[in-house]
Image (cartoon, rainbow, N blue to C red):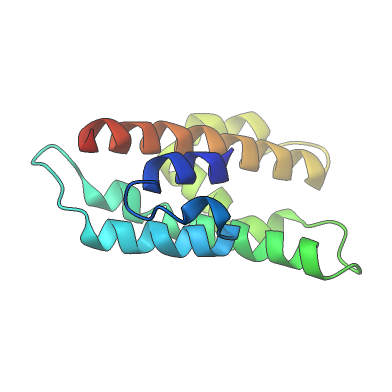
Length: 129
């Protein structure tokens, strides 16, 4: 979902975005944010705050894809994602923070981040349209 949203946002900025790997798409997103000239209503900090959790998701994804000894990840592996959600949407964080198992925390955190990310990217797309 995150990758799809990045492609939709960045297609005009980088026509080759679809053929790039997830990490490269995150890098193009960073470049886009540096080049983007926001309107008066845009708060660029909102979009810049997405970079750290995205980079951490990229790192976990790379570990899972390239290291067959690592079939799982823990909430410690996505601590920046969880911290981002706790700061931006404490209401969503409350929904999963007390899960009995770590997998539930991971699923809740990733689902919450994707929801927030989708919303923020939709706002950005509207502002550049």
